[in-house]
Image 1 (cartoon, protein in one colour):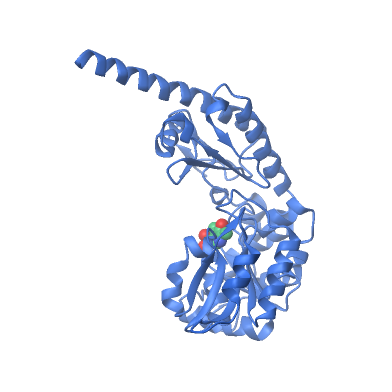
Image 2 (tube, protein in one colour; image 1 turned 60 degrees about the horizontal axis):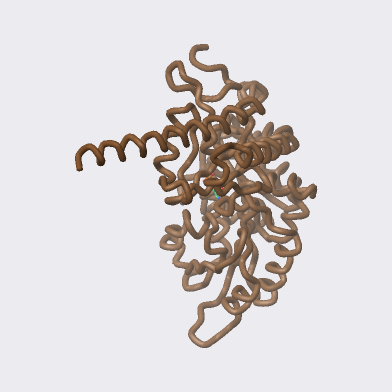
Length: 373
Ligand SMILES: *Cc1c(COP(=O)(O)O)cnc(C)c1O
């Protein structure tokens, strides 16, 4: 086999980057490749793929639901949750910075349902604003579905308190609305709370989990929920082009993910805390607003440094570290299986070196302006 070893991070030519852009960069494990090669296969569009059916049943069981559906992405799982639980001219309510609202709202144009964002804090909708929005009123659309997200991507991996999830569920049920949980990183949230994933899943009728983030599977997500609803989602999946043939090859990796990759997420969380602490100790710390992560995402606010997130990301890249600009002033750093303690130390040093380089750049520019004036 050429190139990098399968359990190792991606490289760019000879240089190995410390890739903190996302936990989606994780490669399949050796165990996943072995499971893929040995998977029993069928035609999932014809009479079913046995490995996909196993993954669906096992994920449903893990989350305390009757049935599951394997889909190519969590985006499709969320879309199917909306299509099966909200009709045209009904409202789907969700926290205003949730992935469903910010990145998947275009789906509303396919479903005909109206997506309404509810302001919140740390990923948790304001219960007051949610009750006001969901209450019946003249000329209001019927609220059909309320969506939760935990851990919360945009809120820096924040974890919703279980009591908040239950309060949202009570409000929704009181108005006859269902609850969908966008649990793309549900297992991170469960591990952080020290609770079984099904305890969190209990707060919703349907749950989407992503297998291709910190769990390291190469692709795929699972939607779980009541049997008849999942059957309907299976038919809609075909309409969307999400029904695949010998999909057990991918589902086999997904099974390894849910059975063996959940517990180790604590390591990613520990690395994120280590990164946060290391950044708060660096010489540039006073200019950086570093978040204290609940899970595996550290947000670094660079607004006080006078340089944009784009500029910081480019400078860090020159020092061997990849991060993602998150808007104009935030950097997003995500820990995952390919990041060890040594790389966290190196990443913190890269922040220091990048800061010096950015300042030198400023000094150089100032000299130029002085000379030319
Ligand atoms: C990544 C993510 C999704 C979408 O997952 P894909 O599998 O990439 O489609 C949905 N919701 C949240 C919260 C996510 O982080």
